[in-house]
Amino acid sequence: MVAQGHFDFWGVLDRRKWIVFLGMVAGIGLAILYYYQTPTLYRSVAKVQIKPRNPVAMHLSRLGGGGGILPDAEEYMAYRHDKIIAEDTMIRKCLDASDGALYKLKSFQGEGPEEVIKTVMENLKVTPDKEEMSIYEIQYDSTNRDDATHLVNNLVKTYEKDLTQIHKDETAESISYLSQVENNTIADLARIQEELDQLTALDNVPRVNTHLGQDLYSMTIQELKPKVSRMRDLMNEALAERDRSEEALQMGVEATQAKVEVLKQRNSIRLEGSTKDVEFQASARSQELIMNIQVNLDRIRSRLGPGHPQVESLEKQLQMVQQSIEENRQFAEQIRGGTSDDPALILQYYIQGLTQEIDTYRAIISRDIVELQKALAKASEVQAIRNQIKSLEERKTQVQHRLEEIQTQIVEINPSGNI
Image 1 (cartoon, rainbow, N blue to C red):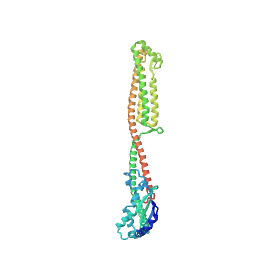
Image 2 (image 1 turned 120 degrees about the horizontal axis):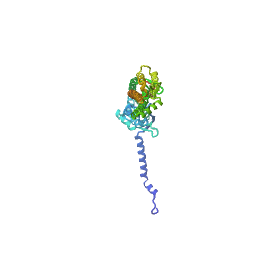
Image 3 (image 1 turned 30 degrees about the vertical axis):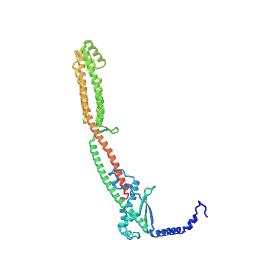
Image 4 (image 1 turned 90 degrees about the horizontal axis):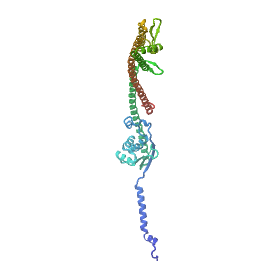
């Protein structure tokens, strides 16, 4: 007798043992049936590493309009190869490459070409490695062990051959494009050189100081600017002296006599002999002017030679100053005799000599200003030409560097030069 509230497991099992037995038999039978009815699948796995032979030789459509930066090769491979290998186009190439032999594999018996392609696509899986993006795992499941291995090996060979041809085509295309760019760059370089030659021919100003890079115009400007300034100072000094002399003459006999005595002390005039001849001496201003002109004349004549326009101009200036001094000397001889002791007459002749000296300064300044303006205009033209030359030389250097980069790229893409 079983105690109340206690479950009799063994009793229940004994009473229903046939049900349990039949369930076990049915389960084992179904397992055996599934085993014999379900075909055995074999998996073939291959790992391949795909890297471009030369990343520079990637298709020009990926150059960003021919002048962009190439994309990272690893990133490009990661999203592309696993998809291309598993595409029906690549599978069809693989199957067709065997002259139809792969279509007749045991695992494809009874299937047409399109059905075979569909079967391969359903059982093929290509995945990139998570750590090394250039490595891909190709796996294929088949009911026939040899078929799985055979198909994977042929697929790898087909894609390798396809990549090799693509690389060759794209390398040839890249070289063709770069060669065209190279030719255009060489033509551009030739045009720049032609412009440089033309501008250099225009820059034909004689160099008078190679060490300092000084040409004729810059030397002329350098010499004429201080000369004109000094001539103006001398002219203003002569003008002031004339004004003082005229003022003394207007103030009367005493002022006139005092002025003449000052002139005697300064040796501006000299009274000699019993006849008290008056001889007007060349003023210190005239002497300085003659010395400056003579120094410049000797220096420029040694550089440019006789007959040069600038040399002739200085020779005329020197003659003008010497002629002015000679006129003053002749003027002094005209007042020899008894009238030479008249202070008013002496001062009048002195004022007239200053006027001639001032006129000489004005003529020299006027002529020098004309020469200075010409030199400034020519120097501006020359400087504009030299600025263009400098700009073209910089552009030439840039184009030469670009040409070297293009030629280096061509060698990197095709080191052997066979393509």
